[in-house]
Image (tube, rainbow, N blue to C red; front, side):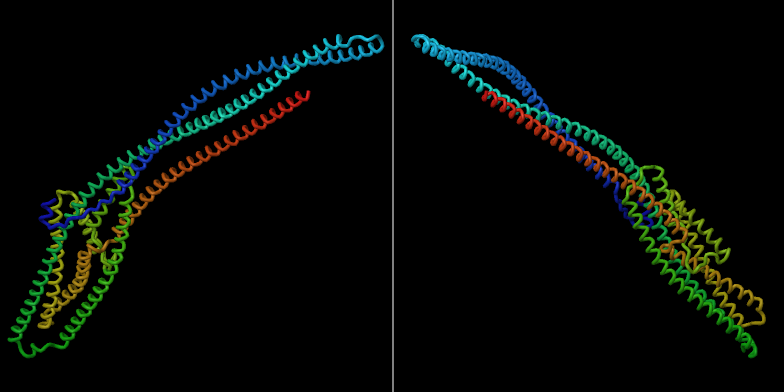
Length: 571
């Protein structure tokens, strides 16, 4: 590579390598790191929740033990209350018996008073003293029973307070149990989310591996394309050097041909002067017919030159317009290729090979095919079309051989030979034009002797006009090969651009579908979180409703107990 650049003075081709796939891989790696961080946070939360669950389980066990102890105490207090109620019933019965005895004693006293009035005086003290003693005994018993009743009421109040405390403890325990259930549900949901995240991580790892393989394949294709572009750049530099040398040689040939034409004209003039020296005066004088024919020939040549000038002006205008159009098209192609280079390439190896083949065909067609000038019609003559086809075939073969490293020197010598042949062809036409001028001078010398030669010269003039047009068209093709693009090559470029755009659209659609899937997953996660929040709110409402029902039932029980206590007190 260095030797070829030193020989031909090749310009270094600057290769810009945009790396969109690397950017996408970095983006995917960042997403993976974010997902790993989220997993770490979720795992830490799960560990914290497990620790809280263990603490809550311990607290629930302690509360259960306390509730069991309170239940035992309640049973004991209920048994004690039953015994006290039985004692109270016995005391009430004894009280009733004492009242009945009191009423009987009073009745007996009344009877005694009545009997005393009727009978003789009986000492009342002997009768009243035992009765008073019994009354005192019963009063003492009643006071002791009232004290026992007050003590029992105090015990019942303390038991009710203990029951209320136990109910509060049970409520707190139930609330804690509900919280534990909610935490367990949240843990279950988090486990599901972790499984989903793990599956997503697996999918992302698979896509990451696929992208890495695609990047490796693309890097290989890029290296191959770089090698091809470097070889094509060296070949292009060599072709440019040969074109410069050929243009210099053509200019030297033109100067030499002009000098030869001038020498020939001067020689013809000298020959005519020498021929007229030994002729008579009648022979020296030019006849009218010869003068008219010469004038007509000169006018025809002037008209032909004017037509050539008009055609050259038209071709120049058309070439300028075509250059502008092709510059615009090339700009659009460059933008499309840049857009394609910025987009990622599909992972299929067959598509990479097809794109490589397309780019190689683009390079071969761009460097090998000759471009048609606008002044030359598409189907002017059969001979010209066949000549152009043969030139196109030879050029395509030369370019395909030039892409091989071993055929670079063949291409150099082949292109040089073609350019030399073209220069010789143009020089021959110029020599033919100079010969025509010499023949015209000889016609001035002797018209009658060279009529057949004049006919041949007219035929040669016509053919020379056609050949000059062909040579000009070929020269304009050679000169504009660097700027003008043929219709066939433009169609090929358009097809390749369309294929590249289709592939880009397919890749964009794939990326769009992946983004939509990600959005759908996020929407599902949001919906699940919303459903969890709604269920949590429902559980809270149900718990509040249960608490309200429990409070209402407790208030009803308290009212019933108060009513029963008030009724007992009234009794």
